[in-house]
Image 1 (cartoon, rainbow, N blue to C red):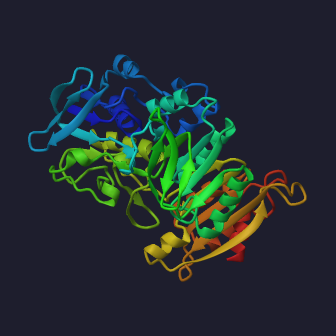
Image 2 (image 1 turned 45 degrees about the vertical axis):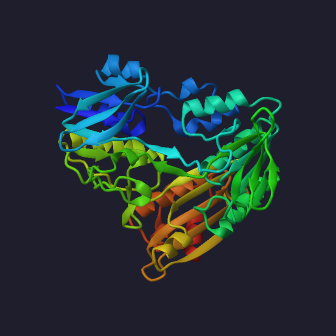
Image 3 (image 1 turned 90 degrees about the horizontal axis):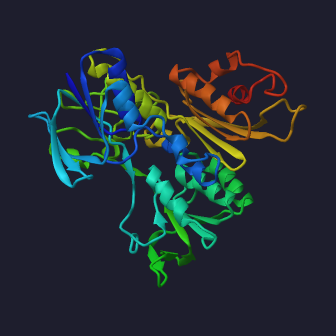
Length: 444
C-alpha cells in the first residue's frame, strides 16, 4: 500500500509514525511545501524573547531523521497544487527546481494546516509587516528587530496577538494592539475580558478598539512607518498581523471533497473525507465538538497531533475514532493565565443553548496561606438540565489545573452539581478545602 501525506508537521507526521509503527511493507511519501518538518509552532513567540534559545530547539525530528531512521520518504519545498481523486494522483511544484511533479497514492492524507489571514490592505507588502506561523516567519522578525525598532503595532487580539505582545514588551518595545472589535480575546465573555485589559494596561500595552485598519504608510526606504485606520494614524516601526487563519484547502476545489466550517475539510470520526481513501487531519480539518455536538474549527496543536494519530491508524485499517474536543485552551499573558474550556455565554447563545452562569472571586491557595494570588472563576451551564457547558478562569498559579478539571468534566458530560462531589487534592499551599471550581458550583 502506498500512502501519500501532504504536510510535514504535527498531523501529517503523527499519522506517518502510526503507519510505520503499526504496519509493515508499506510505502510512505510526504510532501511539505516549506523546509521544516515536525516543529513546535506554539513555541515560536518564545524564541524572540529568549525563553527558547533557538528555533532549532522547536524541531522534534528533521526530514533526514524520518527518512533514515523510519523509512519515510520526505520532500521539502514540494507544494501539492492539485489532487485527482479518480486517478488517485497528486500534482505539484518542486520549488527546489521549479519543475512539476506527480505521484500516485492508494490512500491520501491531507494535513496542509492553515495560513495566517493577510487582508488586502494598501501597503500590506511593505517591509516591516509580518505574520507569524512558521520558523522562517519568526526568523525574519528576529532579523528585522533592532534598537531602531521602538514602536510595534499588533493587529488582532487573539492567541498570537496576546503572546506576541508579552514577548515584545519583554525585549523593551512599545507595544500597541489594534482590535476592530470592542475587546481582546473574544473567546472569553465580556466580564472576563476586562481582566485581560487590566493586565495589558498594567504592562503599558496600549489598547485601541473599534478601529478598522485601512493600510500602511512607509518611509523613503520602503519600511513601514505607520498603520492607517478609519480613525487615524499610528506610528509603527514594525507591524504584526494576527487576525486569524484560513485552512489550506483551496487546492482541493473541484475534487468533490466537502469543506464546511471556515473552509476546513469536514471529516467523520475516522478522519475520512467525503471522498474514498482521502483523509484529513489538523488545522485544515474540522473537529467534532462534544459540547456543541457538531463539527467545529478550533485549530490547535493538541488537536492536530491527536487527529494525525487517529488518521494514521485508520489508514492502515485499525478502526480508531477521534473522540472529539471540548474547546480547551490556555494563554500566558504577562502575570496572568487565561484558561477557557467548553462554551462561553456568547457561544451558547449563538447556538441557542439555554444557559446561565455564575462567577466568583477566589484564590489559588487557602485564604489564610496566601491572599496574593486572586482567581476569577466563571461556570456556564444549562439552566434547565444543569449540564455543565463551559468555564473561564483567569488568575495566576493553578488556573491550568482547574481548567483541565473542567475539561475532563465536560468530556464526561457532568452536571454543574456533580462538580461539588469531586475528590480534589487539598493542602493550604495549593487549594482551599473547597476548590474554587467547587465554590462556583456550590454558588450555582
